[in-house]
Length: 259
Image 1 (cartoon, rainbow, N blue to C red):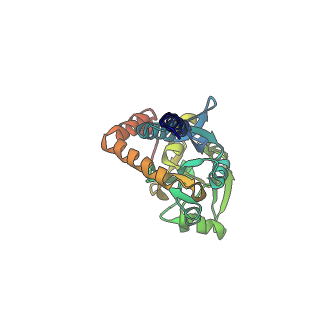
Image 2 (cartoon, one colour):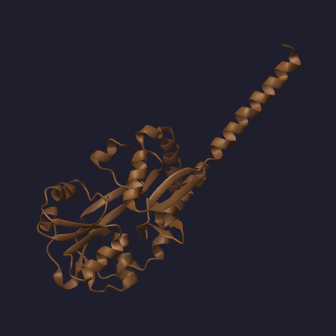
């Protein structure tokens, strides 16, 4: 093999490797979020919207990696995540899910509250106080180990739907004793529909961190390490706090009655 042949082969290999790298870098990571959990994550005009989309975009920009965020019903999001066709954002950790997914560092922390009609309040200190209640929940969601265990034991009755909007309507109609929802989602529904006769009970059910997770068989641990580094950088720069603060400022939480 003469010197010119070697040079040509070297250049061909260089172009192939370079092109492969560009294709890899340009391939967006596919992430799904809930389509019906405003204001944190929802579908708007055919696109994913809400706090999680905002934070994910900022984190992926720091990673210099494209992301495709889709909003789908939560049950479908969980199916896609388990199958490995997409990562799932806004997901909680549970013992069962830890067997399936590799998780990022926490993206955000949601406060889960128990919402009731103002004239039908009850004392709530723990899951035991929900015994015998009819409770509105979201299909496919976990509400913490204690709640999930009591649910499996049929300590109370749950009525799963695919969005909080339906749960709050059922609560207003007297078909539920209470609804468990994130602080943001519950307050959003109250403000949106002017449900001034609905309020959260004083004690929260759970403070639950949310994550980005990929099925273990997709081998995304190294990717999640890069994601975590970008998330830390976003927080250390102060940009994360500003993004959350500005987003929450748009939701008029202070007008919501709290007992």
